[in-house]
Length: 335
Image (cartoon, rainbow, N blue to C red; front, side):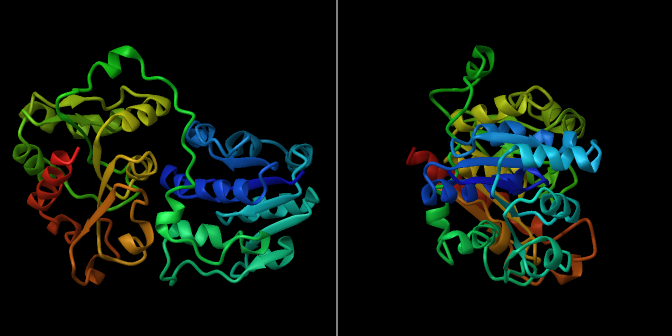
């Protein structure tokens, strides 16, 4: 029986777009054992994936002496590790653990020493989506050279969702379009701005939409002006665990956000995921758009190079709220 470790030790959105790697491996090797090496705060997402058999907590492992980490990797019995996220320390430890196949890109110098299956892959200037690039690492293991985004949408496997607690489930309105607004990005991306979200809220008829705000507790403080101005908003910031957020997104009808983890979760869970992006490479939608059967992105068609060195981006704020309202009304009426 083959045994794989998928290594992706970064953020939630990146992990979501890596789940199809597990789905394709499961298709190629149905009786295999698939483990995921990730950060502690992504565990609930990884555990919700039906294609993954176990979670390795990198936040715990990296606190151990190198010899103990090597022994822990050996104890998994894995014969293949796929370095989706480049991490020199993990590459070296996998080599020391004697994992037979160690897959990485040929664009990292250290992989010449630590990986014996090297894939010619450069993400920075690639025309492909992040999820497509992830799957190219599986080509030496029998995968196709290129999967369409429509194909990839069928490989997430987020089926192990926990039931929503009744008080949270009761907040959803059966007679309205339940729309989640996730304005902030934990500082990890360009944001559409509170003024645009304020306009969007004002344009959506209360009788047709039930609106929810999500985010962590610190973001909730930044969003307090919206809650004061629109008391009909249901403020869930800081109130949901990641398990609960997953299940709540799945039960809702749509979500609006910039290129954040919840946007990719919404796309993977099959609801209407509306993403707002800057037109600047490499964080443009060509690389990071939500991938799902009901995913949609909005971007201003312009040159955004002037914003490249800034943490802010005026270009993303040029996407008009009216454009989203038009699309939302279209999908609401087809609900």
